Amino acid sequence: MGIDLSRLWEVICSVFTSGHTETASRPWAKTGAYPPRLGNEVKIFLDGQAAYREIGAAFHQAKKFLYLTISFGSQDFLLVPKNGETMFDILRSRRKEGVDVRMVVWQPGRTTPDTIPNPTPKATIAGVNEGVGSIQARWDVAKGYEGMYRSPGGHFEPFPLDFPAILGCHHQKTYIMDDGDGGIIAFVGGVNPVQAYWDTPTHDSIDVRRVPKGKDLLQGLEDVPPLHDIFYRIKGQASGDVLANFVERYNGASIRHAEVTQDVISPFTVDQIPQVPNGIEVQVLRTIAPKTYTGTESGDRGIRELYLNAIHNAKEGDLVYIEDQYFFDHGIISEIHEAAERGAKIIAILSWKPDEGTSVGEVEAVLEEIAHFQDEGRLVAGHRNVAILTLGNRRTDPRTPGRLIYSETYIHSKTLAVVGHDCAVMTGGSANIAFTSMWFHSEMNIACTDYALIKDWVGQLWSEHLCISIAEASRLLSSPNEAFDFFKEQAQRNLQAMNDGLLPDGCVYPREGTIFPSRELDGINLTSVIVPERQAGL
Image (tube, rainbow, N blue to C red; front, side, top):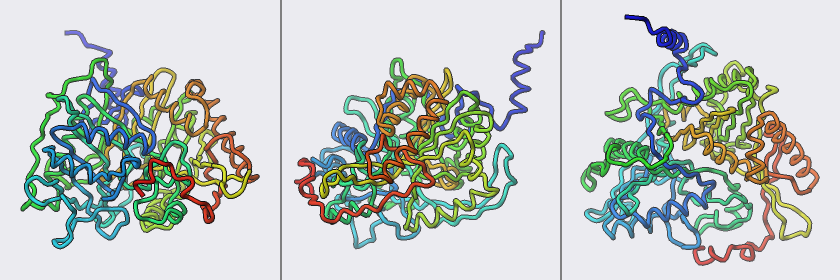
């Protein structure tokens, strides 16, 4: 029998590159719970208005089941403000119409704003866990992490970490339902069902539709900046993995309310879901802490594995595009630095001051200091091939003709795209580039490698941020060096324009050296700028 030399060479290569075995075109996570699935349709929705308009429509179309995973949330959240109908109003209505409505909700380890904590025996949520015919809900306490913090690339010496469960979070945001026609739809993303997360692509600093019902409009707008985020809609077999995640989490939830809820029996298995003709390959990725659920005793770090695979393969002539709230998983930052050293261009759009002034922000600031071990983050930020930027917005000031109101746009999107000459990979969902998200917070992302689709999605994002046409954004994507210079140069021009009180060209700014003014809106007659569709819902 002859020796297959090509196969032998593949085996030898796999041994010596065992930390990163995938190619740039197939960077799939091998350790994740779910494999890549063929035959899927995926659509992207930028910002809360588009995402929740689509999710709300899907709520109304479902005939059999509606399943939700909630981390942060509000009972008064208006998916479509013009309707004046809260998410819980819709869910209660659908349950009365015979749809099986269930949710698994994060139970924080301490008092946390914008969450829906487990009701005490005397405090109930109307229509939830009230017996037959009501919404069934379970709450889930998250795990912490104790163990060694390692870099697969060996960029730093492993060191021990011990984070108690009080710092854990079930951070997934998913919606799964039947489509009313025998199929299934899944939504995976980052926009929490909290009114402050609802926003439009213009990110208008005085759009009162972002203010929760019953809250003072002026205070609501001054307290919380506009926010940018993303959701994905999936049809096809990958949606079955989003469903499987819900079933695992709901049935394994730590606060089960067994007297009024029952375990869910999955209405579909993956092999019962038909592939979408001409669909794309998609992998559903997770982070799950070890010993959280019976079926995932060792945990799941598929999201981190895909990040490392994708960035590891970025080289000169490639573009790495990032949108993220945080930027401090040290292993990933190390890989980004190595990619920049190889000549890849890195454009990172990051939050200006993530969670400033909040308890969450204080905890994350401590974690960021840990993640800057050996100052890797500072090395990246100062690299010639790295642009660290942020987002802002502007609008005319109704109080003074010719004057502009400037504000940051909070970046809640969690997106990575690596685009080469003829291949690409993109992932997005709930996971930040943070130790918490990559190691022990419950997260869900999706990933795909469809080159044309990824270029279209990134083109939509650049069109919004740079205020250019999608066609121009697509052209820039084909020239990483030009795109890199375009972002950096516009960011500097925008900062100078803001400092001079003039109209910026677009929405990107340097992250370092930019100081957005406080949102002082006193004196604006907000009722005169209320979008008419919202007035009935205030």
